[in-house]
Amino acid sequence: MITIVYQGDAKPDVGTIEFNLVNYINRVGWATYADEVLLWDSETGKISDFNTRFSFEINTQGVPLYGHGLCFFLAPVGSLIPPNSAGGFLGLFNTTTSDSPSNQIVSIEFDSFHNPEWDPHGIDGHVGINNNSIASAVYTQWNASSHSEDTANVLVTYNSTTKDLSVSWSYLTTNSPRENSSLSMRIDLMKVLPERVMVGFSAATGMYVERHVLKSWEFHSNLEEPATNGKNTRRIKILVASAVPVSVLIAGTVISCIMWFLWKKRQTKIGETKNLASINDDELERGAGPRRFSFKDLESATNNFSEGRKLGEGGFGAVYRGYLIDLDIEIAVKRISRGSKQGKKEYATEVKVISQSRHRNLVQLIGWCHDKRELLLVYEFMPNGSLDSHLFGRRIPLTWPVRYKISLGLASAIFYLHEECEQCVVHRDIKSNNVMLDSSFNAKLGDFGLARLMSHELGPKTTGLAGTIGYLAPEYISTGRASKESDVYSFGVVLLEIATGRMSADPREATETGLVEQVWDLYGEGKLLSVVDEKLNQDFDVKQAECVMIAGLWCANPDNQSRPSIRQAIQVLNFEIAPPDLPKNMPLPVFHALPVSFISKQLGINNSSTTDGSEI
Figure 1 (cartoon, helix red, strand yellow):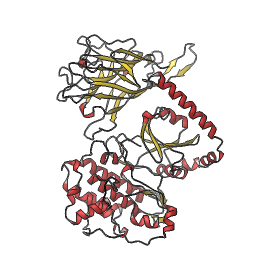
Figure 2: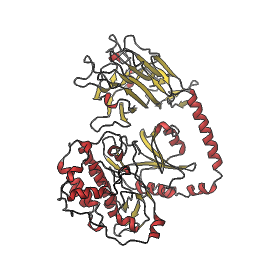
Figure 3: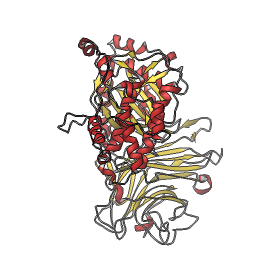
Figure 4: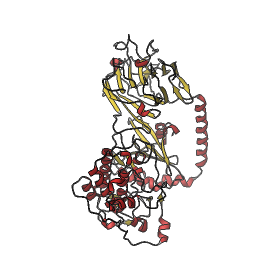
């Protein structure tokens, strides 16, 4: 069993670690891994690559003055809390040792209180990387109260080849595009730290207080441990994910055993197994880039698909956050539920379509897995979640420059699919929930399970109706024929959502009119700017906002013959051509309807949904 050692005020508390008695000043708590970690080998001269992932919460309790912070650190084995190290020393130093080269301590600090003696000038709080000193060698501004009671997810990595030590972080609901969320510095840890180190966390209060809670922690190292017989070596992987009571571990083991038994029992269902086996691996692997993973790989990467790693859940299944040690990247794993409508066909379609598509505004598919009767897709992790979670959820509202950038990025992705791929890709499910945001709030279109490949020369073809209510073009609903034009319609709806902050079809509103009709009515009345998202507080570029909404209406014109191509829409958004003069009244759709019997057989639509989690 993995053991955590507690010093000072730190103690386990129902699956977390509490560091401080929050009502007391000048307190320190340490939580460290009990075993020493081999950082470098004096005989071979090799130094370890390592990464650690942890999540924590700081509660500033709504008061204007609070402190002092929490840090992850590496220190000599056997280190103890120094005397008089509370407050700004963060439990690691004191007045005697604060700048001594003999410290042999490297730390990454989330410092919530400004100490003028050593903290960066002009900022209240910061995240910093510290080398044998309480003063940060590199730092960026950070404000604890802006993220009070929100969970921070942190990744720290060290590359022994480049000597780069880096840290990145994101929050569940309070990420802001105005904040930097990563740091790195070059440091040769072999020259700074002893061969074997202890790893852990320290948190401190001073004259002001705050609450520090560690919610999860993993640590991985890849250096081979010398064997006692001198002949063999073994590869170690230290996993410290057990800052939890033993009872929770036992319960997890029991649940795992039950799941294993049920899995074995279901193996008798030969038909389903054959269906999964019928997916052609050679065909899937023709696309450059993505690869096949084993179920074991992804189980390990997601900590056995633990609830703490779950980013979101929908009708298709659930999405989990993970980390691939060999690739040194964070991932999002979509685990498709067996009863999901997004079954084998959609799974294979997504792999084939997106593996052949490479663009900066498309979510990157890293790999897939169909093993043990499971269907899983592996994507790059998007720390800022989905667009809809910012527009309609509880995340920090997007600024206008970010919204405008997202509009252009999404348009670029669709142009690539429609015009630049070898075969035209019709997405069929463009919506704000499928637009993901990376760490810099760049838009990335994802979820290609409903996509179809078409010839550039041929027109639309009957595919069967699929997609999400509120984003479906009228002629697509009527005929079941997906086309570039139906994708452009969906794009237009998303543009209107970006500008207005309103859902395409909001179940909470009593009105029967959709977003397109509402905005078109205001356009006809000359009141278009009155519908711009109130959360912007009038802080937006009037010309750009008007352009985005007119382009949105043009794209979402019910008459598909009057819609622009995605190229024309981009030209308008970039002010390369003038926006069109649209009719004051919304046009009626013009198409040849198919029999109702066709629609009832082909219907495969979803209700629009919103999630606050980073999905892929």
